[in-house]
Amino acid sequence: MRDALPLVWREIPERYNLIGSTCENCKQEFFPQRLICPNCRRKGNLVPKKMPDEGKIFSFTQVHSGAKGFENETPYTLAIVEMPNGVRVLGHIVDAQPEKIEIGTKVKAVFRRIFAEGEEGIIAYGFKFKVAD
Ligand SMILES: [Zn+2]
Image (cartoon, rainbow, N blue to C red; front, side):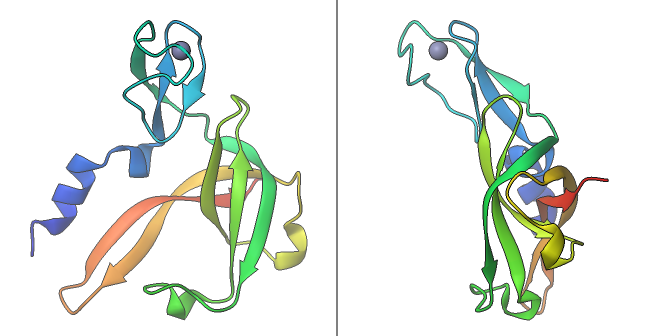
């Protein structure tokens, strides 16, 4: 089980780096990464692209009854964040007073613990969002 964390890091870089894709043909950006551009199909050429690490809250919800693995974190806020490139990402909002969170609030992606699992304590890290100053 000791190898679990490095494996997660290696195999899923987009979870902590916000790496999506951009289509060199139509210039549209996607997150998570895609293999085929839905606009261009075979004419498209998708290449990895780092997503902007700032965006604004497009919509949000307060979660009072947490999903498995998140029971200890309630209440927490889940938001759909819209980035300047039009990509929308679902993520947790951390370190914010609930009254500071509204539609249009500027947020910044931060690297945080996502969950810890079992006695071996596998800890997965990934991005969350923090209200920007
Ligand atoms: Zn395309």
